[in-house]
Each structure stands twice: as structure tokens, then as C-alpha cells.
Length: 289
Image 1 (tube, rainbow, N blue to C red):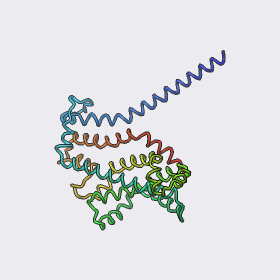
Image 2: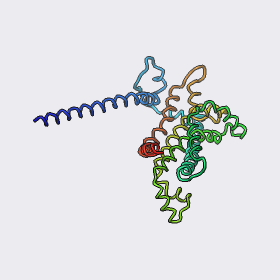
Image 3: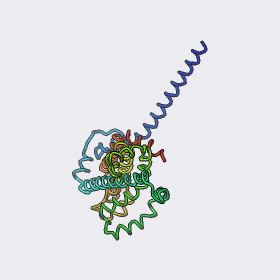
Image 4: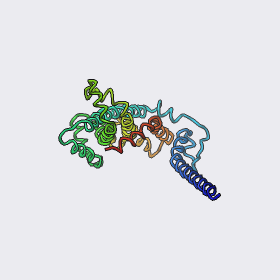
């Protein structure tokens, strides 16, 4: 009888813990999603609803005029979206290639000063980006890459490489070296092992690099503002600032909110589609070494 009472109490306690778990996480979900929902609804409101005082939460009528204005009536915004996409794509490609090669080298090869070089790379993660923007600007200008998306891509890759190399090196470290030895017996060179044997096994680390690099490049503002002084080369975050400060202090709230929604969508979709591999890469690779 006493055993049944104890079991009943434990079940009640487990039920209470489960209820509190979901209740707390549900409240946190509402807190985080509420601002996003407000922005999404505002992007679907007509212009008259956006200037009402007090504000009207639910649109009187749903309209896509703001998105139409962003994509088809505003050439600068369309160009900025395209440039942001190109810059983010090139940054991801460059970062993945370089970090994979470097991570493979640090993990699989032995050379003098390997640990020192790796520690030096990690130390660069502790340096804020703002103090080095001036020398980077001078270097990029002397290379003739100011107001050039390739110059911006080089800077973004430079900022993303330390973490990406750390991630890829630890991901390779989590793979047994016996696999390399078996491949070498079959006549594979180190590069063949990297490009033919390793890709599936290190895919979580690569996905982690892709997600973090894309989100950083897509949303980056300060570097693009400094390096892109020509309005024709503005990326989307810069043009969002310009949109928020209109003529005579006016703000096109509908255009601003639709641009904000459009800026969030790629990051949300990429994370949702790749979250399984992303979380796996963080938990397996980042905890090694």
C-alpha cells in the first residue's frame, strides 16, 4: 500500500514538472514570437492602418501592397536584396572551402608549430571587429576593392574563418583516423580522402558553418556601411536604415516592415531546414578537442 502511495506521489510530481516545463517554454515562445508576429501583421496592413493612434493590432484588410512596393516599385531595394544574396552566397562558399581545408590540415597533419598557429587563430576571435576596420579599409582600398562586393566578401570571410576553422577542426577530430588509414590502403591520397570519404561524415560541421556564416553575412550592417559608400552598392541592412529615415523625417512604415519580414525569412527558413544537422554539428564537433 505504501509503495502505491509513493508511486502515485511520484507520478503527480512528474506531471507537475512536465506541466511547468511546457508552461514556462510556452510563455518564452510567446515572448519571442510576439514581436515577429507584430512585424508580420504590420507588413500586411494598408498605409492608413499604420499611422492610427492608438495603434490597431489587427489589420482592417490584408494587403500585399507593401511587398509589391518593395519588390517591383523600389529598384534600390530589389538591387540591395540581390547584392545581399550574392554577398552571403559567396561568403558561405569561401568560408566553407577554406575552413574545411584548414580544419582537415590541423586535424590530420603534424607540422611544427601546429598548436601555436591554431591558438593564434582562436585568439583572433577575442578581438572586436571595430578596431580593425580602419586597417582593413585601407588594405581593401589599396587593392581597389572598395565599393566592390568581392572586397566585402573577403572581409566577411576573414571575420568568419576563426570560428569556422575551430568548428571544422573539431569535427574532423571526432572522426576515427582508422578511416583515413583504410582509405590510404585503397590508394586514396589525402585530398581524395577529404573530398570523397569525409564529406558525409563532416556534414554536420559544414552545415553549422553554412548557417552561422549566412546569418552573419546576410544581417551584417557596420562593415557594409563603411566599405560600401556608393548607394548603388548598398546591401539590404543599409537600405533598411535609409528606409527608416525618409524625406522630411517621414517613414514608410509599410515598406520598412515588409523589408524586415523579407530580411528575416531566409535566416528562419535556412535554420528550420538545417536545424537537425546544425545542432548535431554543435554538439559533436564543438565539444571535441
